[in-house]
Image (cartoon, rainbow, N blue to C red; front, side, top):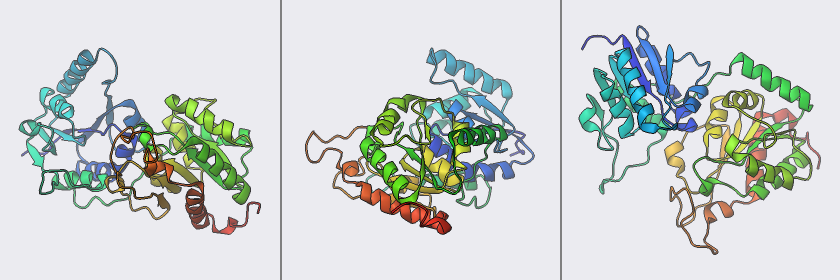
Amino acid sequence: MPEAKEVVVFLPNWVGDVVMATPALAALREHFAQARLTFVGRPGALETLAGSGLCDEQIVDPSKQRPRLRKWMALAREIRRRRFDHAILLPNSFRSAALAWVGGAKRISGYDRDLRGWMLTDKLRPRRDARGRFVPVPAIDYYNALAERLGTGLAGRRMRLAVRDEDARTADGLLAEAGHDPSHPLVMLNPGAAFGVSKMWRRERYAELGELLARRRGAQIIVNAAPSEKALAADVVAAMGSPPLLDFSARDNTLGLLKGLLRRCDLLVTNDTGARHLAAALGIGVVTLFGSTDPQWAAIDYDRERIVRRAVSCSPCQKRICPQPPGPLYHQCMQSLTVEMAMRAAEEVLDLVRPAARAGGQS
């Protein structure tokens, strides 16, 4: 097959998955060094990779906008206009394969699943158990296996992101204006989760943890919130005894600004959501509270992360809302995670990333 000159990569939809795909994307960029590499993705996916230099061009996927069928057809026409030699599908969806197929890509590579195998020219079968169920595979390895199948060689497991200069300047300006003291640990609390409430730790516990970090470690606290999570973040702030350094329930945020702020943080405490992967890719400490989701799917083997999780009989259920009826078993995967458990993990990470500041707080 002749060497591809125009290559398009369809990005995952979730921010965390995009970050976990960065080792594979870097390997593809190197492998197709002589080709024009284009990414197709939703705005959040493209913003996550902004400044990374991993592609030559981007095409925004407007799939969430209405009318959806018309937007889909317009995107398919745009892909056809580009005359791509090779389309690489990181999402598992039928939709991404159909876009590449209708868009006229000469070669289409992806996992053979979700009834789309007939559209693929290069197929990789996902791992299944004896009953035909998908075997949990870390997303990093899942994407790497596809890249390596295309001849990239070993992709590695290190996630990497860039922060644009303008986002770094905006973040630094906000911190300076708020009175950030670099001699104190900077800790971000991320109480939301786009997937659903089953992933969320109780908001009053986030507030209590923030107060404890401030009292014991002298930490300055940022309460993060996506635009749809402002009410949740406001409840966290209201339950805190003193205002945080930065409160994103009361101001707007962007992915670029979030990366800029995380770059300055020592620690992120978060539910299993995209901010976790952003922080790990930027090299800061992370404490992740796991409940309804299986850590195996999102394993990143990051030495500056501590996972707080308690095994209960119904977890991981992978449900957006706890399926248990109201009562003692309801949402136990998250309800059983105490502030003390999270604090122990947070202090362990802070001791790792700021060893000279162990006695920086108040007793």
